[in-house]
Image (cartoon, rainbow, N blue to C red; front, side, top):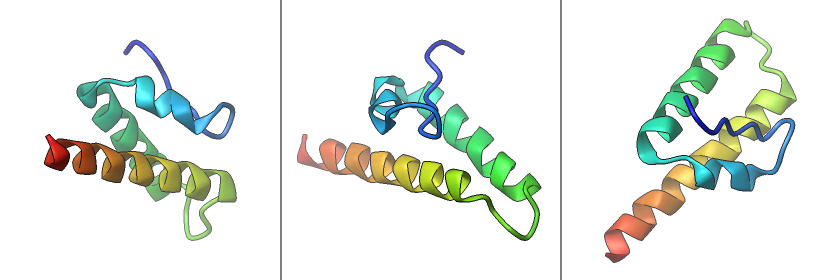
Length: 66
């Protein structure tokens, strides 16, 4: 899969290094991990999801500016 971004164990800027297909695969895997975590989602997954969502918004804003 190439570069693997993990905000729980590394800087959120790693997410920026992913190309779009890798980014969406990563986001999908993260959503699956959250879904399988049960009723109580661990804080590290919440933080990671927030970072991925922020990166998604950044990418959308960049595309709109082009």
